[in-house]
Amino acid sequence: MKNSHDFIFAAVNALPDPVYVFSENGDYIDVIGRSAGDGKNLIGRNIYEVIDKHLADRFIAIIRETITNDEPNIYEYDFDDQTCSIGAAEPGKIWFEARVAPFSFMDKRCVLWLTRDITEQKNIESKLKETSFSDPLTGVYSRSFFITELNSFYHRFLRTFRTYSVISVDMDGFREMMEVYGQKVCDSILVHIARVLQRVLRQSDVVARLGGDKFSVLLPDTDVKGAEILAERLRKVLESSDITTPSGKLKLTASFGCSQVSAQDEAYENSVSRAEIAVSMAKLAGKNTVRSIL
Image (cartoon, rainbow, N blue to C red; front, top):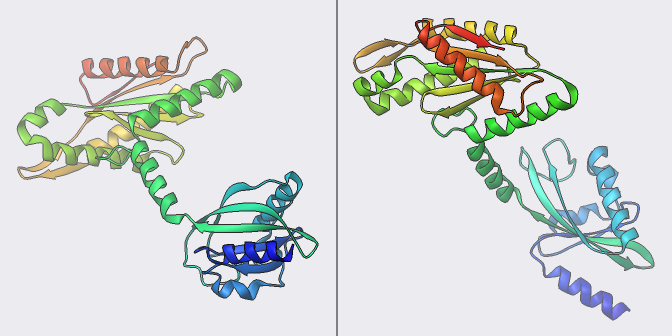
């Protein structure tokens, strides 16, 4: 048996990542591996002395689950600069992948806990996720994310009857601006509009660019009257702002259409369709105005 243990420890000690040996109660029995380094100072301590209670509770649960099931498993967890009282981790969140396997050592039920830093992988995943959720030009949410959120709110409404409203926003005279000022100036106009929307609206509201000069806003827990008030505020702020172009300052206006989810809606698209019809009504009424359809 000793030779078996010696072989396992020799193999593990060659690994580039640290491997912790935990007892069933969370004691550090050993720290091995080529990068064990200062981790040796943990030997003899308990996990509750090293990391905060919330994460230590999770570690203990993982250790005991692994021992009880008698089979290895893979987990992910993160540290931040407030979580660990030992070591010199850089500020910010650090992600790890743990491969945990049951192991008997000196008649104690233990686990081998092989840890690998996956922070870079997580950051890449986060950036990819953020890119898919965001409109690359304006930085507000993308059409696909807006549709996903709208669908979620619609099904929540079916379960709980918690209302929501939608505001459709359509620039006035954007096609003419494109012909006169060109793509670069019109891109800056769209960025400006997105910033106005983000500045005026609440943190809980979902602002998205649906394409071209069309934006849409999802307003949780808001009826159509509340949507009209917010839309009017947006209209006034946008009208009072201007943007500098090579030809001078340019005044901007937009038309707004509001609608509220209804018990008669058969799909999430219905409220958006009504809001878009309301935008058309606002255009016909002379632009730079707000209209709504229940």
